[in-house]
Length: 259
View (tube, rainbow, N blue to C red):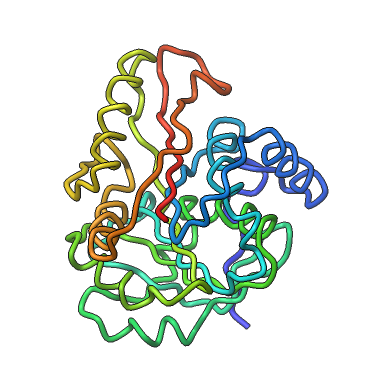
């Protein structure tokens, strides 16, 4: 069995299973509740001390759906390696301190012949944009398989086609991982992230990398949302100056539900 081991346990989130469960419970308990029954979520991927409260707001929407979701399609940007197209993993399992998550090989078989798809263990090995979501999924869902996809430079139509292929029914949840503005002063970040959020709410498929580091998977999801005539709701919009960091150099975080 090929295993993708945790790369950022002990830095982005606790390495101890007991401490990680406690952290997740605290974050989810403190976060607002919203039972909008999402088909897709957009949530951030920084260290839990910074973006965890915002991510928890997104994952709290799954409370009434946990027994129905059996597959999670998780898309995030490539931070560690240059990448064109979309990279599938070369592993059977993604491991976290909370246990192993099986990769849905049948789902990967569905998309592997698409032009944009490659297999790259290197793209996944150190990528935190997917990993930080896994403990939240393990804590909020019951029994699910994972379709982890690292998205590089890719047109929205291409990403949307992959999402459409894997859309499924109520058994499938789609999660796009992205932060918003990076390293602006607090008030400047608030203004930019508000403008970006307005664009996201209008399902604009031209978000750029200055607005959201996960713009490529995000734009693809927004285009797919247009096709399905779904609604997008903003659940939370804050930055690291609101959670744990200084206010002169912040990163923006948003949580959104598509339903």
